[in-house]
Image (tube, rainbow, N blue to C red; front, top):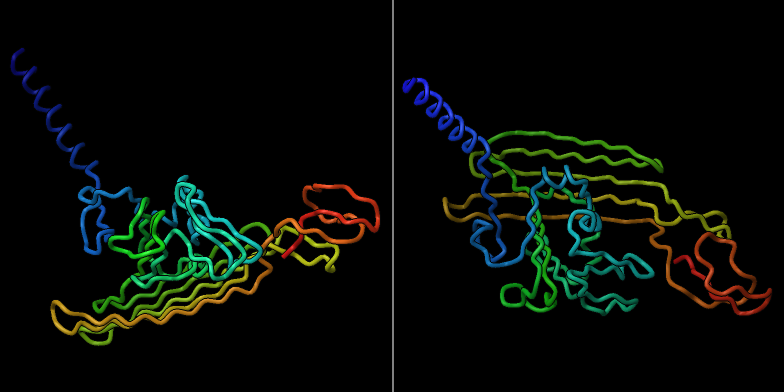
Length: 283
């Protein structure tokens, strides 16, 4: 009887040890303090996502972050150029292009002076870090609410690789992305990526020939060249291009003269023909 009890206890301990090993969490490495560190050692409220986790959560551009993190919001003014990121409700939004945001956007360590410059597809992005709270000590001004840092996937000088992705959805959604990695010797490599994202709009303007708004029509490309100068020094050159050609937004409230609009949307003030009418205007 004693032998049976010891055997059962030994089996339970072995099972517990193997289960703990199998469920061990992978270490998350971030660069929130300008150096690679474990996320547990960084005294900052931070949300880090890898390329795989972004795909699983359906994050294809910066505006999709609002679906996975309740502390961040993305507001759009009368055009995509007036878009603004907000963290914990703190941000800057307006129609003036000179307004500087309260959330700093950094792509591969390069500061983007307007949040709208980050309104593009995640073109070969290896991961993102969302830092909540003031980050002026390490990231400079315009980070009183936080910072968003995006990092591209580095070229690999050890293996040749090709990957492609295609998605489709409602409103004729068409998303296609491709990446090619080409080694150039033992110390150099080139990586080329391209993304084409299109979707029909879901708002129609009867006053403008049934023109659609809020559609998506974006294309972006990126070329990277990595050269290992020494074992501790590397040169990383990145050239990227992006273009958006779409009717952006169902815009702000405006005062016009004439009959009340027949476009969809909440009518704020009903007026008689010829009188001033307050309604939402397409921008």
